Image (tube, rainbow, N blue to C red):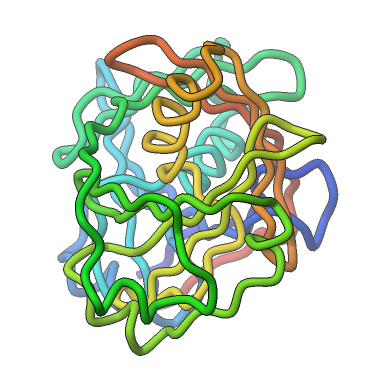
Amino acid sequence: MSYAIYKIDAFTDDLFKGNPAAVCPLLSWPEADVMQKIAMENNLAETAFYVKGEKCIEIRWFTPTVEVDLCGHATLAAAFVLFRFDGYIGNEINFYSIRSGALPVRKEGDFITLNFPADVYNEIEPTELMYKAFDHMPVAVLKGKTDYLFVFETEEQIQSITPDLQTISELDSRGVIITAPSAEVDFVSRFFAPQSGIPEDPVTGSAHTTLTPYWQKKLNKNILTAKQLSKRGGFLKCRFLGQRVEISGQARLFLKGEIFI
């Protein structure tokens, strides 16, 4: 058995930046254990698998250790593969996830725009364990569906912060987003998820389902620009739509090949 595979740098227009994702187009679904082993072998933050249907394209995402509910950069990468290499006709794709529902995507010039459900979050009282997670103190902590959001005062703190990955791995979440306002763009962030097999994710589209409604409320702006300040870095355009958010980015092909199992 063999599968096509693509490696795409997402949320960037430059190779070796943004967030690399593997994409495997399928004719039918293999066992989840097979997809998990492929993702572990790829050893990237995410591997996306998709199967074309009559009315939608079903998509699933795996880290090296677990299947996840939603992944932005791997969805963008999958759309890039469909538009550029898999013969997809048109500028809109109807992705569907059994875990996250309908996920429309459209192509607008060089940008691909994801339409995802907006996260619902609540501000919480930080625990002692949360205060140990970083070497700076957050000004607020919020809990969304899958992640914690730690808010800091300055972009410089986000850039220079040192995470305690062991402590973060003990929190009851997929991972921790950290964020602060920015002078160059509207906000910056980083994302740490050692409990999901990702010490630091280069660019996290799904985190912006939490970040976008948070900063929309803080800045009173529906259209926002953002940077993720990992070593690779990434740029995103976000739009708040109430119960949904749009997250836009570019992508570049790095590799295409074949997996043999």
